[in-house]
Image (cartoon, rainbow over the protein chains, first blue to last red):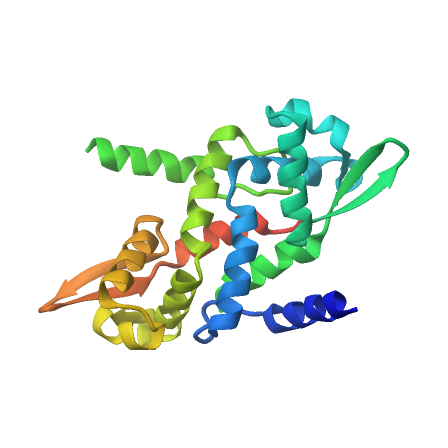
Length: 116
Length: 116
């Protein structure tokens, strides 16, 4: 319950925050830097783009190892970072985990960098 | 001359690159991760937002130390990272350096995260 409330608070604090409208508060800057750090890795950018370009913007973890060119544990680690940061959601069906693009994650970054 | 050509090449390779249209190439992912890393720091996000919210989207380095809450050498280091990544440009007038927002830097990130 406490965790759910924290997540809601963070999302409310940074939703629609723009870099160019007014100086960012320290709290917003910390939160947005953490979100951008999750994105600022070449393997994670490639994984996210592969999921986003897949049918239904969803992919099985079993189909991500080969095109990403890294080992399965490394893929799983990077997918967890992207999921924790709100760029992907995860669901399990049978043996495999499936990852789906969460457009709200990219939208938050788009709002941050949007010019007036 | 070699440097100028390199910069042109990198810019051409990543201009208009989108995460959600097709899987990113390894080269594009490396370049975009480096750009995002320059942005993914709370002090740099605050400095960039202060410059962007200033009159003419330009600020003297002498006016950035106090609102950013870090030392002048730290401010200078972060401004250099933002300038090298294409988010700011720098000009010297008299004693002081002035930093201006370069909208093309943020536009490149906006294109990366744009949804179809």
